[in-house]
Image (tube, rainbow, N blue to C red; front, side, top):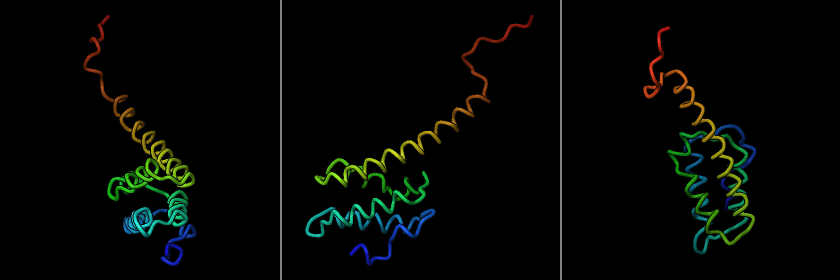
Length: 120
């Protein structure tokens, strides 16, 4: 049972890789077969939403893939809504962060396609 597994929104703050892996395992367990439990899934999604996530943790754990599958496949409206909210939140957070770094690099580099400045 998810509630007794030790995960809670009260953990707050940033997450470590093992916590995310454990939550991912719980999501997968509660979304398939005889262990299907929409309430547990919603609780896990709420927990994830209340915690800080890094791009590195998203890549390493692939939790985003599991949540996106839930968003697409779940017949439960609450799960789809929470999953979509997380996907949108993380996309906005990391796409905007990812765009600012290359833009800053591009501003420092001269454009090789630009015509040379004329000496007047």
